[in-house]
Amino acid sequence: MLRTSRQAACVAVFSVFLGLMACGGGGGGGDGDGGGGTTTTTTTVPPGGTTTTTPGSTPTTTTTTTAVAQNPNCPDNSYSRSDYSFLYALNASQLSGHTIRWASVPVGVSAPEYPTALNAFNQWSGASGGRISFSPGSSIKVAKVVTQAYCGLASIWYNSAGRITRTDIEIAADQTNCSGGVNTVLAHEAGHALGFLGHTSSGLMHPSQGTSISGQEARFATMLYSFPPGTDINPCLTTRRRSGGYSRFDARGRRSYNFVIR
Image (cartoon, rainbow, N blue to C red):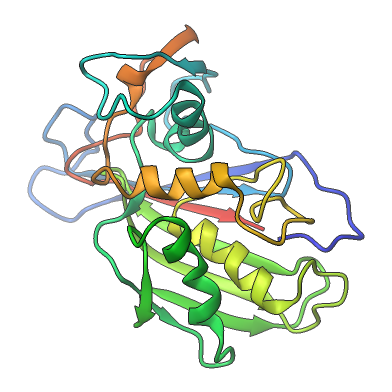
């Protein structure tokens, strides 16, 4: 979350680190083969929007999508076209149209410097009808930092099967010019931790001015945690333009991604 006195940027920094597992036959494999390769991708997104990038040797691709209604392969046709488009833009676009979320709830939170953190996080529990919830634990770690660059920052690790595995949150010690105060910033970063991999134009997940969860954001959280991790929502989307064939999704979860957003 950005301080209100600074303007949101629209630049993404993308870096790829390749590592090979030290087991039986070596080299990296594609999505459909049995190779032993593992990939860790780091995507850093400043406030102001989302970015979709494709790792590997193939060129970066751009996909523009809109949702379609009543597709028999769609996981749930009770949600609207705009709901699926929103879920794609703010989450599934980062995994080739597959959802990214914690595999089980409640999700453990460690925030020793912020005694009210769980109350702030569990605003999302109420908004989602209890589908996402948080409790004491260590899956999400919250730390106070000295910085003037942002009010809050979330670093989210997830694998190629769509399971979030770890999140580190940094909260600025100085909350001057931060909308709503520290509890609002905590709730905003909790939104990123549950799977908001981007910012909205209104509501709590606005990069600098949000103070309360909007109806659209509440539907997003409810919808995301209605489906298992890695749910394919591509059948709910009409692809207007598509190039390249690389998929970031792998049901075996052999690759790891890191998404950093403030």
